Length: 179
Length: 321
Image (cartoon, rainbow over all chains, first blue to last red; front, side):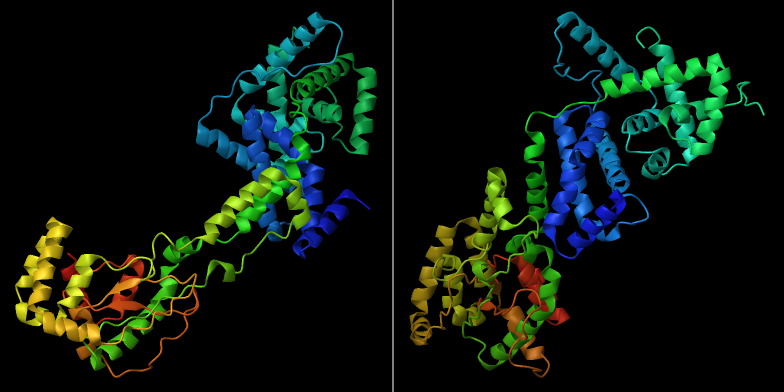
């Protein structure tokens, strides 16, 4: 059974009143949606709020879901829009680095360097124009194809590719010494 | 055929190749080109290194245990969103739904006033007790799953508490909260009102200046009118059939209503129809000769006023001012 068929079945079950079926969909996509929100918002609390709200909104809009799209793409679009709203509403300045996650490694110096590199990459990504940053961050998720990204952002696929290209060129230039 | 970059593959094709986003035919074509072109091979290597770096930097971990409760938190939010709004808020938001019922109730009152214009009339606004309100709960998760999450249960409990006591603050039953002294005094002096004319204005001024002064004034008036007051007292009290959970609204009556009674058309029905929103509705009307109002639910009073004729409505507004 393909992923899409499986999702569709769960959606139909949820629409028919089988609540826990929706719970299975939440469990399936919670990590990916949280990661998307966290990348966009750079803050755990905001990402948590956006991720939860994504599933709540999706639940109440389930009847409007178009099965011609992947369910995950549809969820990502809701999450992306919520993240944009959150950034707008809070007029939040995106911090240039998030607290470094503890890495498993024996060499503290190597760990520090790696964290520095990651922080620098994030910092450069946050300096990109918003449209390029959005495409780049959505592309980090391997589950989202170019076509999916074009659906999420409602832009043509060619625009997705050109924005991605420009974003990567800019990053390549800025991060030449570390990558 | 050469691309703008002077190679057989465009940079975007190389990018799609590095991302694994090309179809089989194009992938094979790019692979053939890469076998001969070191520059494009290097470009693809750079793209892959960049993608790996970005992935490493952009893979934030959630706090430990975060996803253990995620599902139940979402379920709790859905349940909260599905829960009906507290009754009072619903009444306030959907008071338009009460208009037909209130208008009907007003008509019925008008008829009664026509028959017995000086008798204090009492009907009740009966709102279903909280226990009777059918609470819509989320289908997901099941109650057992809900019970598994402590914080969700607590949250839901808070919401239930709100539902449990919806009408108490704004609507009072006669037993729990008797009418304000000035209102009682006014209804006691009902007979005098018609002859006293300008005293009404003085009384209102006194009531506004201080309740104690108003009470004193009313006591003097009541003494002077001992006989009619005694007659009023001797009348049987209206049935106090307020059941637990019954909310009662005091709705102003008075000259405006009496006037409406005179102008009222022939009665269409004697009992108000059941309203669509809140079930059985009766309306308390205290006979207040000068139109003083202590109705705790202005929207209900407004709704009832719609049932009045335009001149009566204008007069009621003027009196309120």
